[in-house]
Structure formats: structure tokens, C-alpha cells
Image 1 (tube, rainbow, N blue to C red):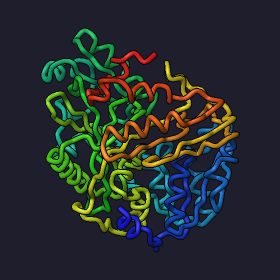
Image 2 (image 1 turned 90 degrees about the vertical axis):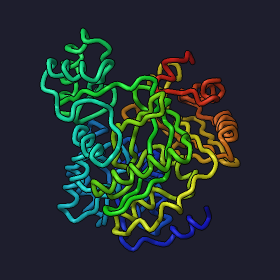
Image 3 (image 1 turned 180 degrees about the vertical axis):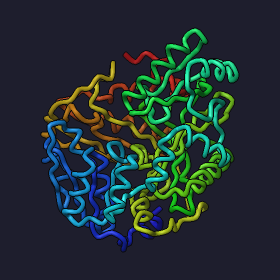
Image 4 (image 1 turned 120 degrees about the vertical axis):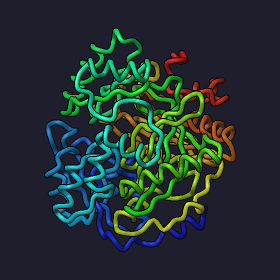
Amino acid sequence: MDSNVKRLSHKTMGFSRVLIANRGEIALRILRSLRTMGTEVAIIHGREDRASLPVRLSDYAVPIYRKDPLQSYLDIEAIVEAAKSVNADAVHPGYGFLAENSAFARRLKDEGIVFIGPSPEVLELLGDKIQARSTMASAGLPVAGGSDHPVENPDEANLIAAGIGYPVIIKAAAGGGGIGMQVVVSPDDLDSAFRLCSSRAKSAFGDGRVFVEKYIQNAQHIEFQVLGDGTNAVHFGERFCSIQRRHQKILEEGPWLDEDTRNSMGQKVVEGARTVGYSGLATFEFLRDSDGEFYFLEVNPRVQVEHTVTEQLTGFDLVSLGIRVASGESIGISQDQIQLTGHAIQARVNAEKPTDFSPAPGRLWECLLPSGPGIRVDSHACSGYSMPRCFDSLLAKIISHGRDREEAISRLDAALRETVLDGVDTLIPLHRKILQEPNFLKKNVTISYLEDHNFG
């Protein structure tokens, strides 16, 4: 592992200064990679984040104050002007906000500023779930049965559903999450579900197009970490992320698959990345049914919250690799150089009530984060920090690494027990219950895990 770190620690020659267009823990994570690479760090910030750790630690901080706090991180023209004002060579979008926005990537390109991520054209392709599904199917990735075009009306949806069999899921072409999905178990429910999904998609994403797909029951959610340079690609193995609430992950781990399955699926995702000329970090997401069959879900064209799991397993700094590729370097890693060692688990410590996942923002009167063998913490939290209500509730990511899954579980539980975040409710009590629950310990976990277990 040390040889990997040493080999990747040389200063990148491509960027002298990078602007981070994000906040919170991911902004701090990106800052740390840039610092290690010898690159100057600039950052934008809203009023609520003016005293945050990423802002305090940056070399340059550009305020973008808006009445709506979210707009501080969504105003494309303001961010482009911020990048120009500090003479940034590139902008790192992190995750969320504008990370997958092709118009933002194209606007930066027009100004001669590098967007650290895939090209605007690839973002557009992958942002359209129908196009992405068709493209990945042509590249050899397995997809669930369903429509390969936008479904125009409930009658057409009925014909498709009858052909592939119920249950089916109606999905928005331009977005995801709970807003863009409707599961239908009976023909009697399809008409209303279709209209609801289309209406919500139009309202949330400005695009009412939907498609119909076979719904995979008792599925597990598995994703592959990929890095491409526009020509070549490699994968860094899989992560298991089936423990979710509202289609958002709260606990991720790896590895999960046997070596043969990993190699087989890994070759497929690498071919998928090459097919679209992907450059940067990405995750290829799949559902796996009870028979072990995989079905392509989507590509997330950005750094993932749970990239930390893969970093612990492989010893590679994925964030730095993504920056180097954006600066024009080739991957410089062969597939056989990437080896998974031990087991890693990440708990997302969200400021939420663990019984119903309602937001629980507030001021951290005391913040004590864990340490010890095999423990990593990524967090922007500190004593005195006020958790804004208007942003995502993620406070910290606590990651354990052990020789095997049992040791990783024991280390994570001990670390969670050691964590003190006085002033807010967090998901830590729920995480500790999960880590001791028999089905979790036996790896008997599907995407309905939280609904199937009463942790109240």
C-alpha cells in the first residue's frame, strides 16, 4: 500500500490552483488531496459556511451570499466568475449541487477552465437514464427488461408491463431517487402511478419523460468504482450499499463478491466506461437479484460519498487520481496493480433522528471524533459548529478497516461508541443496532433491509 501512496504523491503539473465548488466534508476531502499534490486551494462559500473548516483552511475563499442558501452553490455564473477572479485552472464540483450539471461543465469549458469530471457530452448522455441504459446494454452490461424509449402514455406502459410481467417500476428519464420512481404491482395501479411519476418528474427535473422497467424484488444494491481517462479505464472493485433510507445510503462496505464475479462484472463496467469515452471517477450501479443476476441501474459521474471504502481497501487516493486525469494525465495504473485487502465499512453519521430520519440540525457543543487502529474519519464537524438546516444532514463519515469483515464490524462499533456529538441527534444509535443485528452479521441484506427490521 505504501508504494501506491508514494508513487502518486508527486506534484501534479497540470493545475496550479483549483476552485472547490462545494461545502462540508467533501470540500475538506478535496482540499486535502489538493494540498498533498502541492496545488493551491480556492473555495466558494455561502453565508452559513463562512467560518467552516474548508473555508478556514483554503488559500482563497470567495463569498457567494444568496437569500436562498442553496443558490450559493447552484449559481453557475457566480461560480464561473469566482473561478476567474482567483485565476483557477480548474473547478472541482464534489458531489451534489452542480457535480452532474452538463451546462456548468460546458460553461467552464467555454471560459477555458477545466471541469474536474467527465465531458459535458458524457454528462448529458448519462443524465438521460434511457440513453444511458441503451448505451450500456450495447456495451454488454446486463439490463432489466423494459422500454428503450420514453413511454408516451399509460396505455403504452400497460402493454410493456404486460410483456415483462409485474411488478414493474416507472422511472423518470432525467432524474432519480424517490421522486422519480413508482413501483407498480398490479395493472389496476399503473395508470395513476404513470401520471404521478410523470407529473413529479416534470416538476422536479423539468422533464416529464418516463420509462418502464422490470422491478427486481429482494435485490441487493452493488456498485463498482471506476476511473477513466477518456481512452482507458480501470475498476477498483465493488461496494455493497443496500442499507438505505429514502433511496439514500447510510452504510456501505466492501468487498462483497467472490473474485470470479468481481472480475467478470469489472470487465463489463470498464468496457462501459470506454464505450462512452469516460474521463474521471464514476460508479456503475447495479441491482443483484436473489439468483445472483446483475441489472444495470445508472452511472454516477462523480466522486461518491462512499469512495472512502475503496480507498481503504486499495490504498489509492481516488480523489487525487480524478484530479490528475482531469489535468491531462493518463491513468498510469494497470488493472493487476489494484488489489483489495481486508474489509472496510463506512457509517454515514447524519444529523437526523434515528427513529424516523427527520432532520435534527443544531450546534455541536462538544465534538469528539474517534481514532485508533483501522479507523478513518472524514468530517467538517468541530466543537461549536452550527449544523445548517438548509443543507444535507451528513456530519461525518466513520470508516473502519480490518483484516476481515468481523474485525471491521468490531472496530466500527467501538469507534461509534467513542464518538461524541453533543447538541444534535445522529444515526449512531441506529448504526450500532445494525452492526449487532443477526441478518446483517450473516450478510442477509437487501434494499428493503430497514423496512424489514424494526429498529425503533
